[in-house]
Length: 341
Image (cartoon, rainbow, N blue to C red):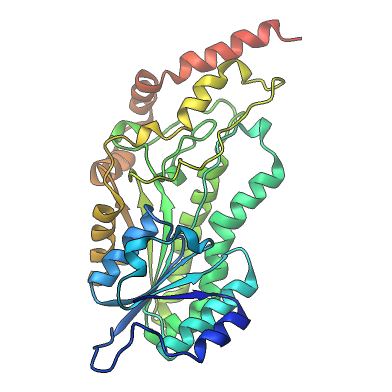
């Protein structure tokens, strides 16, 4: 059976005095360990945890709410469910203490998987919401990496940062890429952003993580730690089930196309994407092979990566407009401006 550990100092100390229920005499222990953030049931983190466990890893699956832990993981051997809030330093420190005690101060793989979506035109965005998004999508992975760095260095391990193809695409309003969207190369580059009037805060946070992760790759290399950045295209997850839909104020310049924006943010573009387990098999295989740098993973990832690098921008403009009718919608905004008081 797995162990449920609340990653706070007091609870960690209490649990530390008890031998984990899944460790029995004569039972072989895993030689490698992995900690994954954001392991709620049905998501990418849960899929990764399941694949790592099947590969023989000692798995620390973390999430904020233990009620959302995948039931199948809770029953598996060599899996510990840690309650971890990646936005709280004390919670991160307690997780480090728990893992250190269980692994003698080593961690072979750290997967920064936690993240959040946000859909809103830049002019209507609450700045505090934007900062919170960057805290979770960008600064939290750095904070977790800093805390677990001594364990990774000791194991000459690997840090894996979950980013998104959205980080390469300057798309108006934000269109959800991480769970889904780039299921065809025609969506791989969006250039229909008029004079900087519109932006996607989610895309910006993932772009920052892509750049930082590549910098960390260079900085961690002499310490013996590999860095792998996941450029995720389409994965079918329940990520949108509990996402609050954007609500544009009536004063918004884009209120006239509010239904269009809402449709882009409701998750319907996930259709046809692979499930988290299929996705995770590919990711864990790359980790075990010793891959470093960037990998594109998800539906049509290889084709999408190729298109991103080689196709001219003008081709994307016309093809994206043909699919999403972006110019038609932006024309409605321009027309509304003529009668706006």
